[in-house]
Length: 66
Length: 226
Image (cartoon, rainbow over all chains, first blue to last red; front, side, top):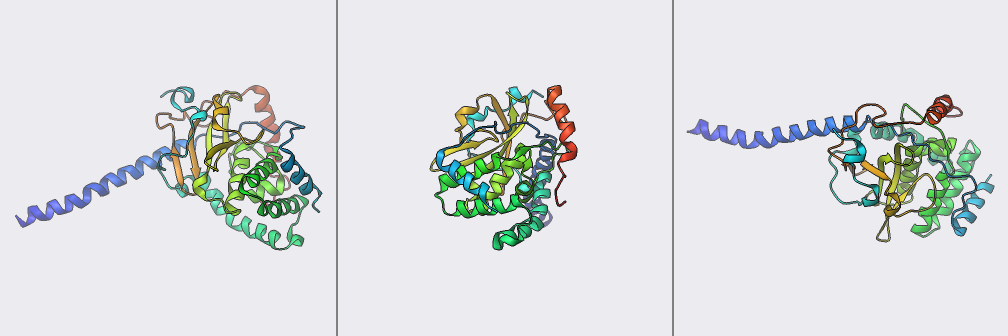
């Protein structure tokens, strides 16, 4: 009887731990797949693009910094 | 296994909802970025503390940008940081190393995720909390390539900051799909049914771009400290 109780206690603690380990493993596998995505899009601000006037004035001031 | 176009949500539907499925430090490009950020940050801090320590004009300008940004209201701050880094010259890195903001500020060169990450880290250093910022990776249906944006929550609105143009709402991005997003708070999987097919998954790169990438491959480390 005592053995059965002890086993059920162990099982109660072990089951979430196994599930958590499986979840971690799944997360690792998914992360590894997402790491396969290589981001290379060529999207650069078009020449002559102007932001709003306030930001443009600040950018002009930054350009003058020496 | 479906194509990203079939299995990932439209970027126009992006929200900050949901829980991360993993910690950011377990994502290799983020972990590498974090490791490199520490030595880079000390150089940047020296420059911020003393203009004489800014070894190149690009860092002097970055320092000035931070000085000005600190005096601005949050939305103006956002606009300044966004447009400052959109002045970055595009260069590809097929190794897909995620550059630190210092690296991008120093070289003023990078590709879309470098620009998104530089905006993210700069806004964080200006006091923006991590739960209002997310680097989003997805498929750009116009470019037919993988792309990165910075999602920002400001004054109750969500903006997606592209490496071109001004601050845009998600509704402007019906042509794009998003797969995952990342911040200091973790990694979000927005398209769990999409399985990348391998390096350059889904990429149908036009030959002209492939040639430009090959040509710029050697430039990425030019004038760089590491």
